Length: 242
Image (cartoon, rainbow, N blue to C red):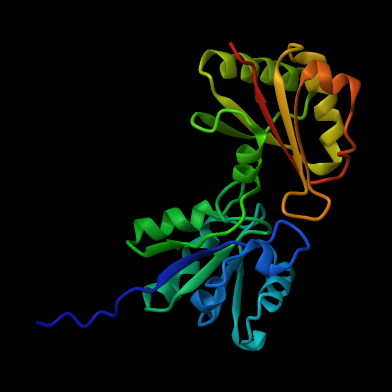
């Protein structure tokens, strides 16, 4: 008997802006043609996703577009239905609130499910604040670890900083982490109080934006020149050299 089952669609991983910037400054010209046919999107926040799509020139009527939210409030059992249309042969897109999907972002859940269902996953090129910061830091880009958010409680945070600092020295590995913008200065204070004076710290803020700031200094040098990073999207990179 001939198998007439329809071929599955594809899951496109769509990069977005890191902030208010011109599309042509951070996104490849081929992005829009790759996704202009899509009528279904998995997104962190619908309003932000619509604004992004309009800014890059997406022309479809949003009344005919399906948006499925995937964020920290989405129950895991809800996600299983998000790929139903893909299994019927329709392509959909996955986008983060900012930057590339699945990096410091919950989108990996839908991608993992796509692999389990043998659905083709297509990552598209775009800005990642983590990789851009690493590129510009001058720290080891051949051996690095992204650690996400450090603990909020002060004592736990100090222990984690010490652990990362020693790991960076022992393994010659750059340690990368982020923080909620309103807690940037608290994290910086903890770093300056905890790390050895010759530990290198890179602070990269507002990447790809006009007010972009990137600087790498020793802890001792940072103590003499505190940056204004409060409430700014920032990436921190740390390495204690041998």
